[in-house]
Image (cartoon, rainbow, N blue to C red; front, side):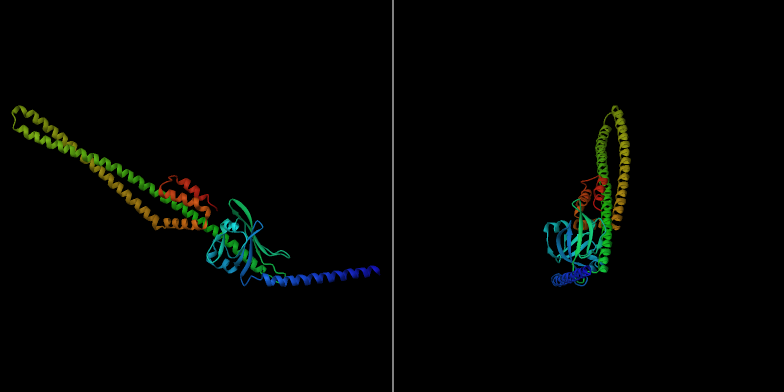
Length: 340
């Protein structure tokens, strides 16, 4: 009998303690709901952590993740409160209207949504920064009564983040490929043009040499003609000298004919070189018509703004264009080494 009474007293004490605790948690929940209710509609108030360190608070838009084309490069947050300025600069890119972006290209793993008991719901992943892998967490508001975000919304955000991450990495890969191909095509065309110019200069020098020789021979002919006229008034004994001069004149004339043929041959070679120049110009026009150089310039501008690690790509491509680097394979290797 005493044992039954003792059990009843213990059971009653447990009920009273539980009710007291529940009432306290309800009061605390109401208080937190008054101070923390910052999420509204599909705009969720979030806390961003890197390696368990809070560095910024702000708002994340679900519709922005699923419909806005402005958010394809990274996770866009409307910044409310900066906790660590240095981390903010290291891990994000500043946008207009007090927004920041964490680029998708840094993330390694898929985003995963979590809903633990008596704790804030979250989304986690890992990303690279300065050659180091870091833990990344988006933590949502925690309400004791009700919730700031339900599981359907959390799963939708997870799916949108993973889709956007994969699309962004694919687009950046295409940009890097376009930059690589554009640099290669431009360097190849420039080498052909440089070779043609060198060959043309050499042929021009050779033509000038033969033109000078023909002019010198012309002077010699004029002199021989003058000598021949002079010998006509001389005695018969000078007839042999006249014959000799005529023979020399014939030989000189033959040599001039030979020079003229060589000049024709060189002229034909020059016309052939001009034909090659036109072919190269047509090929270069095809490159412009195909939009390869335009895509290359667009890719460079995009990479300068969005991909800090792509500076080596831009330098390699510019070096190639300016003729400072003749090694195309080295240029491609540098470009293709950029993440991802």
